Amino acid sequence: MLKLSQEGIQDFRAWAEAGVELPGFSRKEMLRVTEENPAWVHFGAGNIFRGFIAALQQTLLNTDPKQSGIVAVEGFDGEIIDRIYRPYDDLSLVVIMNPDGTLEKKVVGSISDGLIGDPARADDWAKLEGIFRKPSLQIVSFTITEKGYNLKRISGEYMADVAQDILAGPKQPRHIMSKVTALAYTRYKNGALPVAFVSMDNCSHNGEKLGGAVREIAQKWADNGLVEKAFLAYVNDPGKVTFPWTMIDKITPRPSEIIRAALADKGLVGMEILRTDKNTFIAPFVNTEGPQYLVIEEEFPNGRPPLEKAGVLFADRQTVDKAERMKVCTCLNPLHTALAVFGCLLGCELIADEMKDDNLKRLVEKIGYGEGLPVVVHPGILDPEDFLREVIEQRLPNPYIPDTPQRIATDTSQKVGIRFGETIKAYVESEALDPASLTCIPLVIAGWCRYLLGVDDKGREMPLSPDPSLESLRSYLSGVRLGEPESVGNCLRPILGNEELFGLNLYEVGLGEKIERYFKEMVSGENGVRGTLEKYLA
Image 1: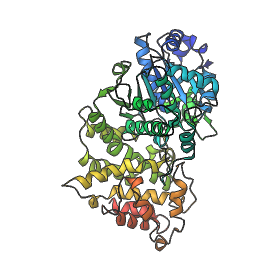
Image 2: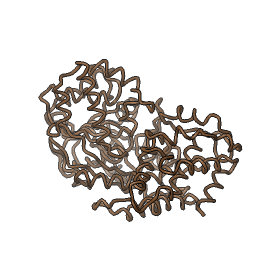
Image 3: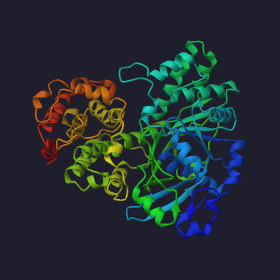
Image 4: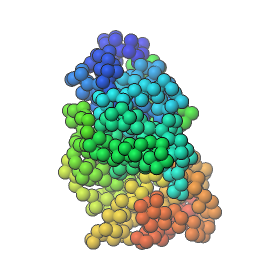
């Protein structure tokens, strides 16, 4: 019987017999170093953090015990800390699922503490404030999803929590960006100490989004006399505070029952999969793929750990931007979204299964090779065609990655502007390319609108994944009825013409009417989605 705990991992032989690699450093020493001189705080304590970022720091700790650990902070779903971190002494079991079916297993012990980032949890918040007062703090990183940086609703109004925070100031922040700004204020009040705030979320110009949100809240607080004007100067001074851009890539799906059972067969106990009240699927283990990429802009005013020794690529902003656009706008994320939308509509259960569908495989190949690669700018540090080939031929078809269309479909309204809008913009700006020539990207946008009806291609009610704009978007489609394409009318205009969604008005670039036509074909009746795909992908 193997138990994931600090005491449990002392039985080195038993873990080795189970094929599990253990940390190669003294956690006791790591905890001491981190308490005295914390260097890294990470917001977003979920699967991608544990399965990728924390594992990077473990690689450094295995060779240099003087490195600090990472303090993990969860600002959205406190159950992750209460039920997954603390009962397991902040240890995680990472399981890499290879395409040949083999599993690589290791215990990640580089997380020094798990904290709930909420002033209502007074002890945790006080500990967090204490860390931000430390001169040793170098990095505050984030995996909070793209919507975590949004301060406003799709209507342009501030969210309720943000509006309250703007009036109340830094003492009791509610929104995650207000919390981060309040902690930055703590650091400012204790000597205007330098630090890098590093978004590692899967979205374009992530550092710009993070920096914009923090600076906007700081500006409002300064305008309202709630903080000193000098604090605003502090968060705008790149010699003190930076917001590096990054590109991150590693598919980390929800924990799999198959992996849980495989671990149980090896004698591991307590590996149950949990679903929190906030709909987070999480377990003491993280199942993930092997390939991983992290490119970070080299902007760290207080220094940084030598993460290049763990495979991280450091570059200037222009190079990071090219790598990120290559991945997020062309070579992976648009393909994922396409599979998510149509997978839900066609009743697919796994992304890997969709790659066995001739229509869907042809769709992603045409989006990637045919419509995306022509506008990709080579980043220099990664080859776009090689990257795309690995995605289509190895990563997406991996049958052991239990990733679902429903998970990928989460928050699609927050993603379509980057995953498709940027490529459309590139066509608009190109002298040699015409956006009206696009077929597959408009098909996906039409498919997403069809998905919003909440009815699959067989006419059955279909659950929709969480999305902050779901209610407002669906309201535009309330009059559309399957089997009655004439009911569509002008209902798509508020969606396709919304520059907040796509970064441009799709009608003005010659795509709005095309998408409307595809949509009408998809709602023509049962199997309309399949028929439309077959028609345009022939």
